[in-house]
Image 1 (tube, rainbow over the protein chains, first blue to last red):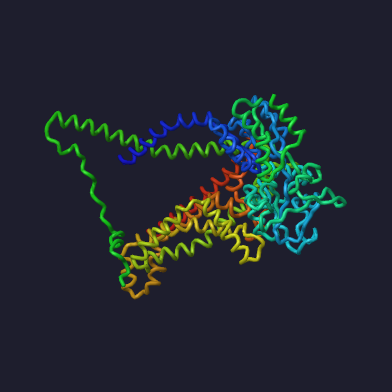
Image 2 (cartoon, each protein chain N blue to C red):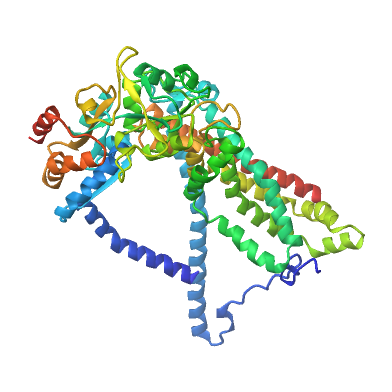
Length: 301
Length: 330
């Protein structure tokens, strides 16, 4: 009993000594939270930034766009990563709490529809992808594949990618309740690589093997067309994204509370600047165009 | 070969040590003795108070949690009719069409993985316990028992990971499915998680059966198998049932492994090989991003309340079984 009490007392004392330091460290540290599609990219950007500016520590967490946005509203992070736009309810909630979000586009993503490498399908139309995820098309035969039930993989509802797909591809209808909801892009990729009848959606930065520069083995990225008449395009080519030919491209955002200042502003400037954009490209995403640059500049002021 | 090892010999009829002697009593001289006595009495009452606070703390925490669950869950039923909440199989709170709050699929899924886990874990657990207490050489037991107990120390997230990369593909191949993220996988992992509890407590209670019972049975000509099944297991039944219930409690409340290994599809389970979402996994997935004080938020607490009540009733039923059994004994 005495020994246990002594240990407990010791722990409490050590805890009390560490606590103020921990909160102090947290005060200085820039907290970035949100989109799981962005988390790897932003982590690498933060590392490079910290190599040059060791006085500004940055911590990057995932959790999904919704998590990041509510983090910014509740004041638990300085920058929110998000791969979808804010909902009206989120914006009004932010204003109620005195948080005035400013948005910066740090990269562009071609949302990739992936299937197992052994799947003979090469392309789908937007309507087909929507019908598959709504659960209306249940068998690969219906879209020209083998006779096998489609096994759906998707993200969880806190994911920006989940919401983006629901709005832009599912036409604001419900996902099929049979969709397996995975905890991040990497898990979807692992599952689809193992599942011959699987289909999934992930950020384009996740499908390319960093070492070879090619699509990861055992995975196939489908070409997507706007409708049955038009040509299908691959999200892997920058030209298709820039021209707007690839139908499920989207901007990747960061939001701050009010005009960014100090370390936060420096970091975002680094990300949207030439050095940061080089990293964005290296990680498999696409650089931002002139229109986004202009908008970013407006939000810095 | 001896049936019992020396370490277990006296368990059944061990003599309790006598009450400890108080230190202050043996003192002789007057005022010193009085002083000592007063300080000792003070110490006694301080210790008494300390343990009273500890004891009541658990009760306060329990009442507090239950109160919080009730108050946070109740507003959900203003928006969602309680009948609909329990009988609808549709759960889609972020739907752009119509938000749906029905938890029947999740209740069915939770019960399915839990029962599946028990079906796998009970025979194996009881078998291992009987082997360890009756058959195994003491050297084997010295090795196996700690290993079983270490099994309990494996973090659930590690088991979940094994479920994804190892058991999932194996299950997919065995049952000719395209993937192994389903209820069977979850049940299998939960069975592994509840095994240490079942084995450890069952073995302890088998060992606690007085040696006289066994000896009498053997002396009457019963075989060791008959002795085990007709004498020892019935005598240890209260502990064995308690171990099943504790294992079940572990399985119902487990979150991370099922979250990782069952695929989390929201539909009502089509069968053992369909992807399912348990109540715990649903809370874990959605509570992180839910806007506070909305119907969705309250509904998640309502799921928590249902979960709490379910485990409560598991314990209550276990208690009733034990009680009835003990009454019959007397």
